[in-house]
Amino acid sequence: MTHIRGPISMFTPSRRALAAAALTAVAALALTACGTEQSGGGGRAGNAGSSTVSQQPSPESAAAQALFDRFEKACPEPGVNSRRPIGTSKPDGEEPETIAPGETPPADPVEPAPPTGPEAELDDRDRCVSAHHEQRVIAALQMLADPTPAKVRTTLNGLGYTDERIHNLKQDGKKTRFHIDLREDGGRLCETGLAAGAVSDVVPCVAVAEGPFKVTSEVRP
Image 1 (cartoon, rainbow, N blue to C red):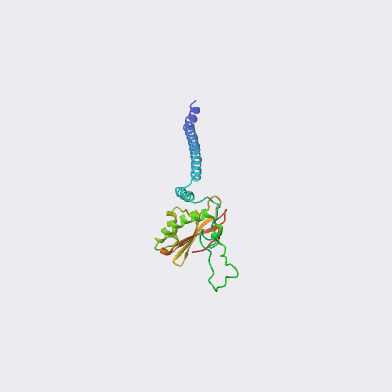
Image 2: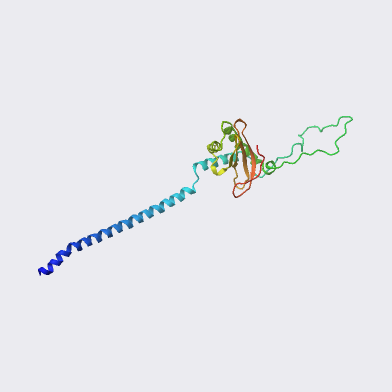
């Protein structure tokens, strides 16, 4: 009996240690699995939250959209282009020009050339909206003593024009040229800008209706 008890007592602590180690490993695996599940669940919630946030416009974009909506409400309905060449008609009640005695009337009437470029392609609404944007951008750029591209971008951002709407920003001597994308609902309105301190200027231009921004017609200031 002593011979049998000897080996049992000698190996029993080892078995208990192995059992304890096994229990510890199982517990660790359970905790790890639990933590992984919680971490995975948290990750999914975070992704969902990120997706929800990405679908919402940024404060800057919301402010810019509110600005565009306000300008559009103050302008005529789209589709009407009342721009006509100067001199095609006379005001009501105005007497026709007379030929002085001894003068020969012109053989052919001189007709003004029809408008071209942005003047011809943009309707009354586009020109009205453009005028609102031009006034505020020019006023801000005139206050910019050193119109570097970085400073011009910061100024335009401060006016509500996000980076997605600012294009072709580049140095031109001591001046900076740029475009602003004002397309809305299939429109083609854009602005061609020149930041040059007191002589800064912004005029309307025409861009492609859809897709990446690209100017198709402009008269650079």
